[in-house]
Image (cartoon, rainbow, N blue to C red):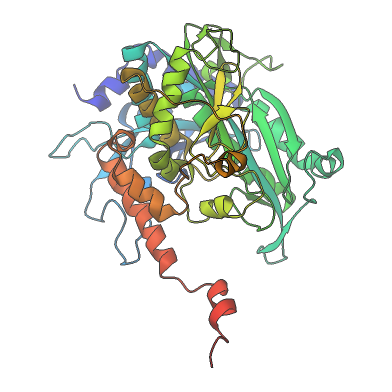
Length: 489
């Protein structure tokens, strides 16, 4: 039996497929987006009339392999990852992810898992390793089977709402003023974020808090932490929601890391912990009839958090947490290629004075470190920005944890001082990679993080990102003109 056949025939899936049909009929759905995630975190896929739900669940749909790399070409004109001669992937819907789109209630969305074509001469019907979402599911299941732990994640997605010119181009300005935590500036964007929250709640989000950050038009809206895969799905969905709200308010929903110099960039701090036990509970969020499958409105609750302190020192994680931190610390350089995955990401690290993490150290509530224990029972990876792919990040963290736990890696002593003070006192501290090229080099030499992107996934990621770096190095920018145009004679 191939991976594809096993996925289609998974026990209980046929009942889920029938339940989706009931939802389709109940909600009046006529069209469905079948979507997966590309190497850069883009949402890609196909739209299919709801009449063909059952057939698509059994047979899937076909799409070129290169869709996993956005069907982009490199600077030499070659398609990244897969050429036009490659076969087509097969996308098989995951019915538990079915949800109605609140902005057009005749349309629904479902995530899919991607497989190699049934007719391939090599490995027909096997899991497509360039499917980052499918990889994360596999890695999370393997990790739990081996160690007994579930990774739970909460993300803090900062992004900016920018204004447009009449022709649709950006004005270069954020909608509000760069005043951090100011309720008045938060209020100025109230119609926007209330619409985001309305759509998010309708799509299964348990929204818990939000604020105005310290860049123009910059907001952060948070939802309850959950299993790593479900949280990644919600982050991808959140980006889609913001894009839709931007269309409705004639704004730009900007997830670019650093569109403005001299103000803070958009990070996406990732909080994590490892748990045993717990159970999935439907959070109905005041809905009498869910516009989705139960799984979409489900969060895991209870269990034992292995990161909680197990000594009198409440600032130190338990033994499992310390080993996990040790694994992340060991691989922080390579992990930066995933968390800070664009050329623009490093503007965040170079624009000093805005709390961006540049030091490969850890501490309790210490924001000058790349990794901090943000509260008893969880730690926060800070060198992640709003452009990252959460599925790749989830897999990378799991591989770090596995290395740390298996090899009993000691993270060293936590740093309580400001890293600037520590260095002035003589402490030798490693910096994170400060360019995409350097981060890619660190990744190329780290087999643990590369294993988070098996086979074709790493090939595509490296090809795509190395080409992005080379294009940047070969580009003449406004900075070049401003600096060198009149330098001679």
